[in-house]
Image (cartoon, rainbow, N blue to C red; front, side, top):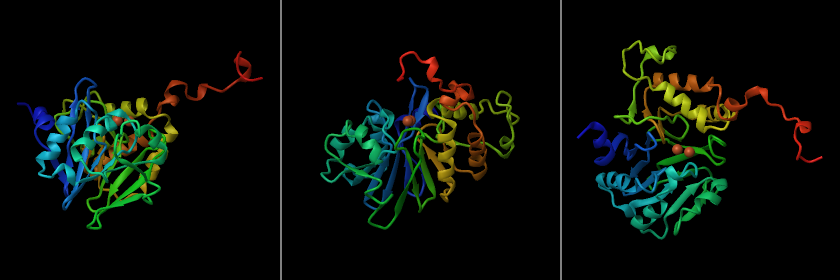
Length: 285
Ligand SMILES: [Fe+2]
Ligand SMILES: [Fe+2]
């Protein structure tokens, strides 16, 4: 069995204090999907739980940590896409808690409610932008609107320093390892085709292309980066691509994203477009 198979089908990977990667490779989409599990005593939450077809793989990894499904108190969805939310009814069935909560931005409830059958939808606003376990361990929610959905936000675990960023810092590509390591040499390197470290594959083009295609605009991406710059995180855990733990590696990706051009609509029409009412034949007169 290959290393990829091990990650995909057999085990959760603990990468911070009681924080587990429980992801899978979406081979058809050529992407890694990364739901995460946080355990705190006999309580747990799942972040961006994953798609419907991949629920067995995710749930098997969750069970491999030894927790009971009924210890999951809340499902956190950082936006409404089906690769995060498709398995909501499966989670609801197996968790079987009448008080199970789905936490999401108020503006995303209108979409997420279509996945849910029995949970109570709770907004960030109702929670005053934080969720606390009984122990006092607290998750902070920081809004990153339109990065890439209207209600997008990130989740910061104060105890571990992990920032769960959903599609922000995401990437295309299926990897053998859920953890990314670059190097100091990558800070200024732009030769993505010929790695000076002789690595067979540079992950940066996949990360940049992902943001150019999934995010709506350069402004939305940069605004999101500015919001999370205020958060004292040490590890970035995105919903696609790989977990980044080294400060240098975070800086490499951060710097590339903060100057990235051609994002979303800016890549399609850029500065060339100016709306001209006279050019439209059916517009209001
Ligand atoms: Fe998304
Ligand atoms: Fe996604």
